[in-house]
Length: 528
Image 1 (cartoon, helix red, strand yellow):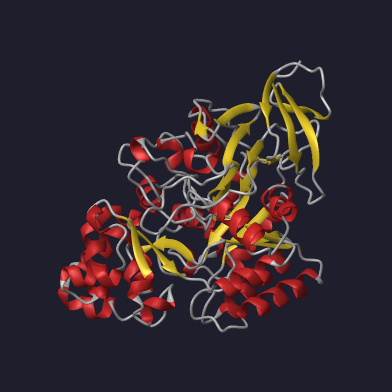
Image 2 (tube, rainbow, N blue to C red):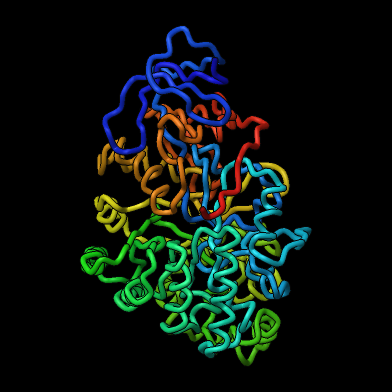
């Protein structure tokens, strides 16, 4: 007897092997049988003509705060994601020794979020008590520990400060963090130097944990940014995951091929290097990334003070090395506002149009929006056309290329119902499988499923997940390979995909017939 029997589906086990038509028996949260289950009893789900695969794993999200506000996991579950990894790009919500600083860097933080934790273990306990709808694992962020130890001081760390940071990282890994992340294009990470990064990554190596890096540059100086991360891995011995690695607008046309050559060379020295990409030309970041580095000194209160000083405006608009080269080249039509509490009527508009509406240069209007957002400026967000489709295709052809959302878990109702973040937030798995695998035939469906299941599970060290095997957790997805498709757009991002019918998380039905159930069966996955 089983709780559920998924009957007659085309089963892709997640390894990239050829599919087989089979039944799957689920009981007590686990996969108990795969094969012909004639005569077995349990609630039957007819999967004839449909694909059955392991639940998808998103190893790069920023849901640290939104999951505490709304733990449902709607936006990811509705596209088949059963496990996500938060705390990316150096920004985790714990440890939290300096609340006033940490909360200013929390993406998606809602005003009523109650900080009841200090250590990383405390945070995981709070998240677990919220009963998330999907499984969640978490990195400890290098930016976070730097904020706790140094604040936003624009300088390299001293030896005793590096010791304090590595102590926080070690404690966090002992308490369940699955790895360490860095975000070197962001404040305060961009003040760190190689010795600091190696020291932090070396702690990850001690635990055989991943060091995931949002590198310092992926456009003008992509060699420097990627090379620094590879050096960090080589010198520390850490397992490196290069995050959302597609070259950005402004990189030379050969950059994608060169980056892969750099990774391959480093792998030949026995370094463990993995990477992932966003399957979309548009990607998100903070609007405050438009500011020159000197403007960050003193934190948000000082930024607000500078933004309000008319004499400083020309200096604030002079930024020859912005995070996006599109800013320097004034390609304001390729940047779209996705989230603003102070100016919700402007959400969905590009910044050329916002400048026209305000009767100002778009750059000046951007600084006005930051000033009007005030203390909440970490949640003023935009997306830009940062990648070339040709580079996405080039990297997807590499067999070890992972695929991620770089999104935050949202909902289309409730306290998160009005938030927008990125066009991949509701449909990235469908875009990858439907567009790049099925329509463009860049890879087979079985290989596409492997990139979303066993590949990320193995990179993150997630035990008994990512495959359809007896004894594995019953994280399963049922979809129609003929119709699965992303339906989100820049103007309407929060639209669930077509073609996805059923999702199981730890053996409970989270989605049935394309509709979210009330089940919240996710687990907080701590490093083992």
